[in-house]
Length: 140
Image (cartoon, rainbow, N blue to C red; front, side):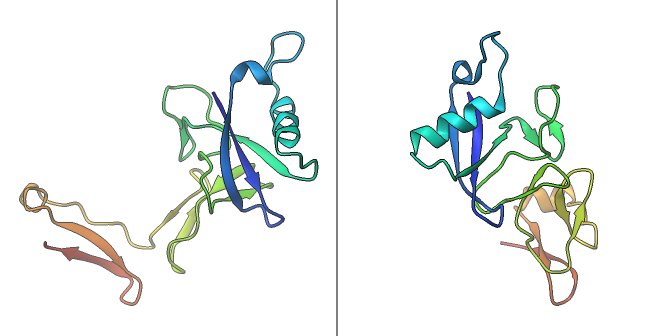
C-alpha cells in the first residue's frame, strides 16, 4: 500500500489515505505518484485538491527497512509539507525547539538526560519544561 497526504492551502496535512500499489502503476508497471494523486482527486471528486505521497516506512530521514527514505517523515494529520525541503515536518512542540535539517524533526535546545537503570525500573521519565528551558524528571 502507498500512502498519500491531503494538504490544505498552507500545506498542512488534513488526512492520510492508503492506495493499493497496483493503482499507481503506469503502462510499464512502474509506480507513479501522479497516478495515485489523480486517483484520489477522482475518488473524492475534487480536482483542486492537493495530495503528496508519503512513506509509512520513513521516520526522521531513515527508512525502517533499509530502503530509500522518502520525504523525511511519514505524514500525519497536522504535519506540514515543506516544498523546499521536500519533507513532512511535525508540528513544533515548543517555541524554543530547533528543526534538525537532516531529520526534519524538532529537537530541544538542551539534550534530554539519560535515565539510570533505577529510574527506568521506577517508571521515571523526563518532560520538557519550556519556562525553565530544561528537562524535569517525573517520578510517578
